Length: 237
Picture 1 (tube, rainbow, N blue to C red):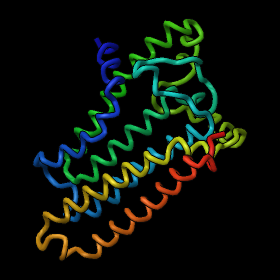
Picture 2: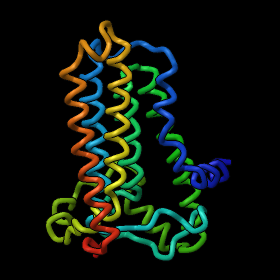
Picture 3: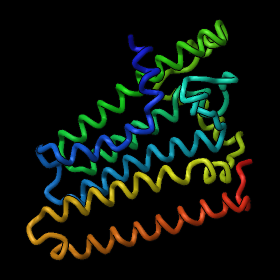
């Protein structure tokens, strides 16, 4: 059953990210009186997830897009960060989803968003492991015995990071849209929450201007990365 659910969620996974924003409409106990604090902490959690994703892609990229929106893999990748945890990208995704949920600034949204993220990726991992075990057999079973599914094995991590070559161009080309998405999302959530406070946006002009600056800088970096990619000036190596 979990494998079937995972295959379904894998097919539609790109539509799951907006879930925390829908929870804006659900009442809940605020985490902070000042929503800017929630946005800052949530942004920190999401940034941690982004660093996990960037580190994974930079040292050893693995295509997780499947084939025809179905679970698929050509090779069994066991190098780089994948030698310490089997699903580092999904760990990063859960952290990003949890960070965005925290930025909404209600306990309801944070807990539901985090639980949703964990459930989605537990199911997707079950579907992927079912596929990988069927394709790679004993090799995948041996990999599972040696490497944790979620929390990374820290022994030897420093050596892995220092001995590997970090491909920063690949990180930018493959990943520039992800941080822009969650940064814009957190900015939008903060503006929404500020508009509902006494005095609205006008009374919290300093926060509004900060959000505007973050958005402009993020948009500029996104546009630059996208332009360099389209012009083939920046190419993944």
